[in-house]
Image (tube, rainbow over all chains, first blue to last red; front, side, top):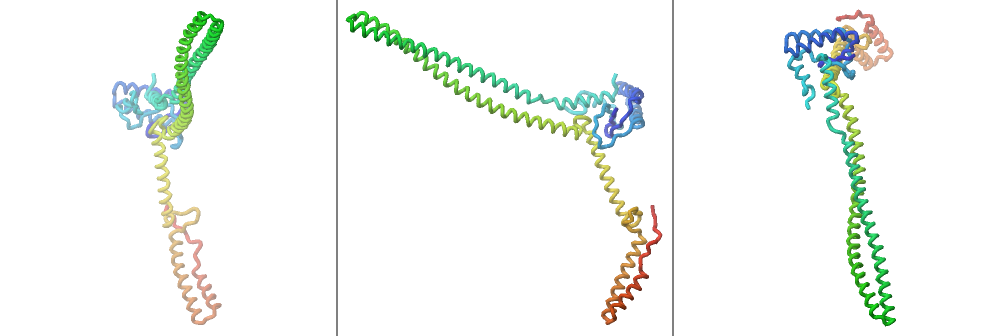
Length: 92
Length: 263
């Protein structure tokens, strides 16, 4: 599966790694919904590190659709929440 | 339960699809409109046919009445010839009544004919309009299909269909990398030229060789001057050449100069 970290690029990951990533991802969502900025940042960092560690980066000029997308490492809880709201990402 | 990763992915895809589907397909709208126009044209044509049928029926009735009228006139003439004036009067009064009907029918006929002409003209105009619309519709559809294909291609490249600006960032990074590589190549060229870097291709010279070249270059000029002077002094060219080659040998570039490697 191909995962994109916004602002960084895409990584190709074997399906076997998804159990680990999903756990962190679900945690991240819970922290976002709870509004726990500190834990959110920590988990996001851990999740991004896991993707970078477990995956193989795709070349910059590859144009493949990503199945999963992660916010940029510097994204704040508010920004991610905004992106996940209905009018986020692409206005209109 | 879907985490942030999945939800972001889903939202991106949903948004991209929405962006593509936002405008309803104008090709369908055009086809529908054309269909409606054809139906209208059909109705007008049916109207023209109905009016024409009524007109023909009136014409038949008129013919019959005219025949009857002629017949009554003949009968009246015969009755008069036979001296039956009463019968002749009866025939002529019936004929007068018929004549009234004929006049009424003729008025109706004229009205219908006028109606029919107007409708035929309208049908022709409508036909022309519908034909023109069909041509235009096909042109618009072709243009739209082309534009749509272009949009899809454009979106694939700019990343709007997918991760929007993020792919743009990837391209930006690729461009930055290219610029960086170009800058690096420029710097390496300069370093090679100055002799600070060793050129594995052997094309560039190290600084010692460069210096020796410079010195020997200067000596060559001196050498040339000497030879010219010797020629002017009337010495045989043979001597000058011999002298030149003799001196030239001492100035030959050392090929096995140890190279500096500053890396």
